[in-house]
Amino acid sequence: MICTLGDLLVDVIVRAPAQLAAGADTPAETRLASGGQAANVAAWAVELGEEARFVGKVGDDAAGQLARSLLERRGVEVLGPAVEGGNGVVVALVGPDGERTMATDRGVAPDLRPDELDGAWFEGSRWLHLSGYSLLAEPIAEAAVAAARLAREGGAGVSVDLSSWSAIRSYGPGRFREQLEKLGPDVVFANEPEWELVGAAYALAETAVLKRGSRGVVVHGPDGSEEHPAVGGRDVVDTTGAGDALAAGFIVGGIELGLEAAARCIGQLGAVPS
Image 1 (cartoon, rainbow, N blue to C red):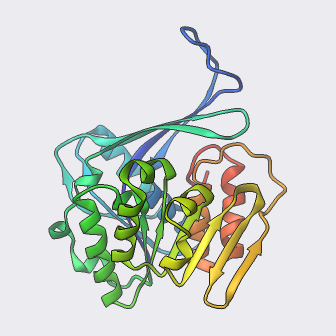
Image 2: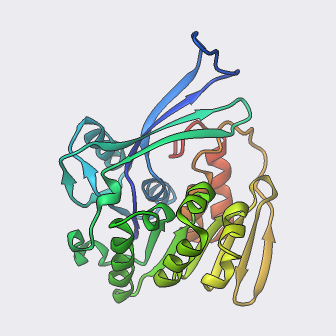
């Protein structure tokens, strides 16, 4: 059982073959799916053969009901309070080269409190994966630390994806690093800008996975560092969620499975398995 904690959002993905025409119509391909980094990791874990459970706060509006339904249809158990308020929505604009720009509304997700957690949610889990976004706001940051403690009491490992260099920069890199040190993860996932902002993430965990896009990854571990090339053979359609697929694969079956999942992800539209 893989458990994740963070945001469950509605993803609205828009892929335009050319530059959007200001003040006019632009033909586009669209997709609606569950989203949020922690939810994406749970969805990929199920796709890769593992049972998965998502923990987070969800709004009781139409967006929240849709996000929950879409994730549950993928076989993910969704746990956590459903509260009055607007659920989060992300609009992802995907360019012809597969790069994406996102407009994010997290809704009620950051309001998850430690006293709303149930220890039973983490029982039977061999791993707890946390979104870095869960460390960038209160009270969900306190809930993330409390969840890590509950998971470890049951023998689970803890991983965190640093998530967003721009959000870390706004929050304060030093302050964010303090949150990571408080969490004490076993595995850290980071891309190169995030890695630089927190001052080399390998010092924060026993294992650190540095994501370098088309140049593959570097895994820093107790016995040294190993480079692994990206899995090729697929055209890049959309890079959204590739890091989430990588994290799920790594947790479920190691770096090779993670790279294969990431390659599958960039060959489709959207962050969850198509």
